[in-house]
Length: 92
Image (cartoon, rainbow, N blue to C red; front, side):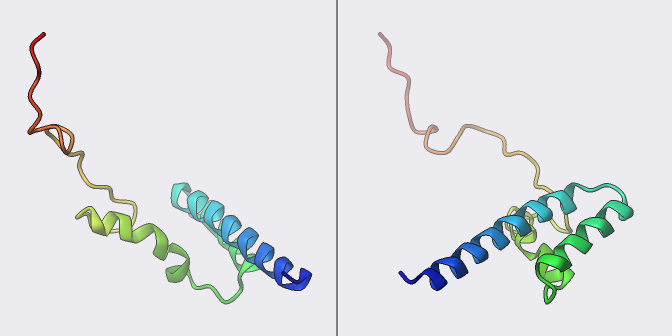
C-alpha cells in the first residue's frame, strides 16, 4: 500500500478515535461551559461536523432499548439470562 494512502487511513482512524473520546466526554459533561470547551475541540478536529451529527452515534442505543431522549437508558431487564430458562438442573 502506498505511503500516502497509509497516512490518510491513519489520519482518519486517529480522527475517529479522537471524536469518540470527545463524544464520551461531552455526554458525561455536567456544565454547559464544559460542553462548550469540548465542542470547540470537536470543531478543530472536524469543522464540518454539526452537533446533531456529533451526537448521533450515542442516540441509537437508547432508542433501540426503548428509551427516549439523550442520555436516557432503559430499565434493567428482569428474569433469567437468555437461554437459561429451558435448562434444568441435574441432580448428582
